[in-house]
Image (cartoon, rainbow, N blue to C red):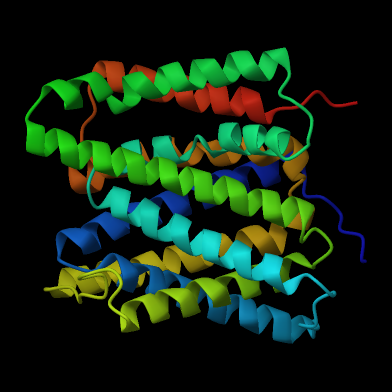
Length: 303
């Protein structure tokens, strides 16, 4: 394996912050597309297809072999299906609740990953991690304003709770995919693993659309604004996802990964500027607690 010289830390942090903003823009563009009648499956097909083309070109350029070690294919297929579920659930949540709230709920995946790892034989969370997990969950209750949704209009409350539930399902699927990647596919080169994952996401979404498993999922936008939003969505996600995996060996993710938690904050700002979605003071406080707790949870003491 070639040795990659890490970027200077200020450059790595700046690049990760930019990627977080790019990925946040993808979700805001998705909401614009959904507001113009685009289907969730169509959005997933656009973003996974674009990313598949970019990563496929990278794998061809690097002349990487697609031959996987024995017993690896089922895990690779499972990872792709989990990412497909994550994409569908998160976009379905974005279509129902403010984008920033959907991203905050989905950002609980580090907690789920820690508990999943423990349940599957890994080390239990430390006392510090347990306290931070509790803090994050408390902040999430404020951010999502669950009591207000429960006590408000029944129809509106049900739609909001469905959106929150879908975002949490996305977090569970993403945490499971990360566990598979770390414990069953760690020996694969990142570009190959990512390309095959996008291939499974694209193929499974295409199959779901052909079989009409999600009613209206493949609906086309009703205006040129919706088509433009779909194009921007695909470009932003393809750029962000591909650059992240291309540059990852030089980003020193062990130290700098918490910077990616800027994504919900950037989504909050873009949601306000583009969509006019506003959160109340308690929701903003809860969001700050969630993001801060996740950043602290992601940091590890360096040996």
